[in-house]
Image 1 (cartoon, helix red, strand yellow):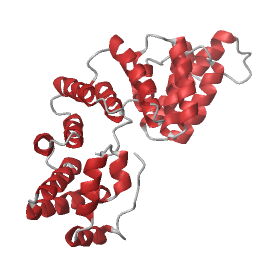
Image 2 (image 1 turned 30 degrees about the vertical axis):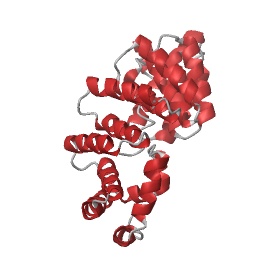
Image 3 (image 1 turned 90 degrees about the horizontal axis):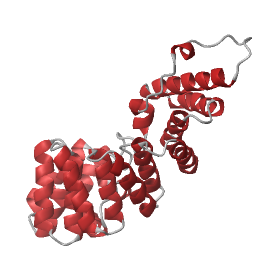
Image 4 (image 1 turned 90 degrees about the vertical axis):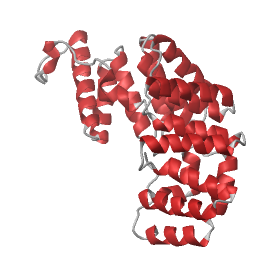
Length: 292
């Protein structure tokens, strides 16, 4: 599936915060009214709620403008900073997003959602140690959240702490047996450790949950081809690429955390005439879009 390093942040803007202010804040105040501090904060919270609503409908530019104003009007409201931070992350403005989320955390140190969002943000910044710290802090408050456990597994995977990575992926699956991306990533770890058969087994399990999941299908194809089962590998690879041609792009695979050993085998696989021919069919008809 598309890059999963971003499972948590927008959940702030999409309703995991209780933003709605008191009834007084539900209507826009007359512009001629002299606003005191409390009214300003209520107006800020109302704008934060509006920003969250706009984000739900993917109106991110409008949402960001309101969230920025909300944080100015209600600078002591962690909700406003949390929503602003999540929208900055959505806009790929990582430093601003992290700064806003850290402000939210300082105002509300027990909010696990902010910590999960920070974990994802630090991961995108490739600051894996901070990602691990933030995610662990959130999980101490709210354990057994599959998306956060998954992100934590990814952070351990990137620091080559493979045993810990698998443990977190398994915890995620224990909470949600249909969460195939975690099963898929156990396969990625197994492959990097040289256990191709174990990796294939994980990917087949992931595929049994979602038969149209292009990622485990492509991974099985590459692994089978590398093992010498070339006809089966090529046929599966063609099917995976028909579902999602991006899995024929090495940059996209790197974004999806495919490790060096699997990438090396994938590059050989992608150079085969049959796969080249399959990719050529999509060259002019599929937009190459790496945003997730």
